[in-house]
Length: 77
Image (cartoon, rainbow, N blue to C red; front, side):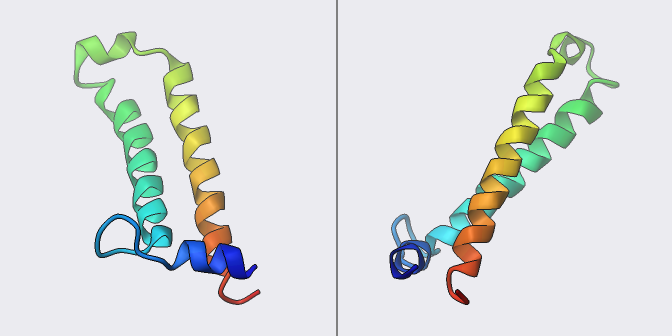
């Protein structure tokens, strides 16, 4: 767990630790999935985007959220 903890809280890409960057990426994926569904009502060319794109965005968000959870809990384990 020390390896996971040091990986999670080291600064690799700027002023934020890796756990925060993974959290930002998770939020962006969730926002993109929700925005895709919302914009299909208003923008006609977005209606051609298949449902599997939304599903893949949601699956990627779940995977990223799980990684974010493991990195966050590595401090307490």
